[in-house]
Amino acid sequence: MIRVVLFDLDGVIRHFDPAHVAEIERRHGLDSGIIAGTAFSAPLIDEVTTGRITRAEWVRRIGERIGNAAAATEWGAHPAMVDGDVLDLSDELRAAGLRTAVLTNGTDTIPAELAAHAISDRFDAVFNSADIGFAKPDARAFQHVLDALEVSATEVFFTDDSAGKLVGAESLSMHTHLFAGVEDLRAQLIAAGMGIGRPAREVFEEAK
Image 1 (spheres, rainbow, N blue to C red):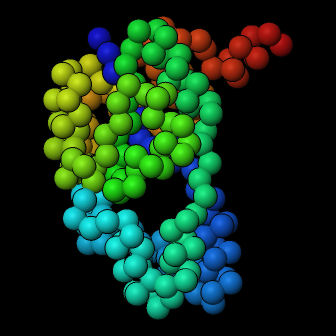
Image 2 (image 1 turned 60 degrees about the horizontal axis):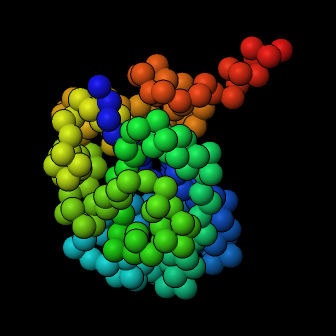
Image 3 (image 1 turned 180 degrees about the vertical axis):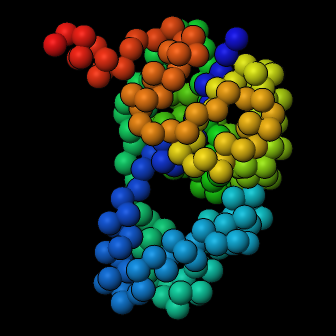
């Protein structure tokens, strides 16, 4: 029986507008995609998401590698949008007696970022790879969550917008779902036996 629903953060709960990054690159005369290509390249991304360097150092190194510290700093302050429907879904799951948690490949500033968006109190626990020392899809990151929550892998349903990140969870026999929108996620949770309401599109079609 599923007892915990585990959410990825970026791409599921929190979203960044790629047009904003493209505008930074355009204004600074940079090649399209160079910032993300640098920021998320190995080993740099591995160092920051496992806590070996700080977010500030990460941004500094990005600026150094792209030859534009100002553009990197501006990118580092990229505003995010939070999906209120996903937060509401977490509330529904908790009201139905389940626990919800977040596992993110994050940096040392994740606590402050979540506090700024009032996200933390909408989940029972938040797990940050920079604190754990292992990042998804490393199975050790998922095992850390299981140990902390004192549940077995088969009692956890994990959703992430990246198929590659699901691999570590699957290796431990967690229930996994490739996130493609909150209504699709809701449908999958209901199919897995969660006691929550049906997706809005289904209710609408039935009422037509």
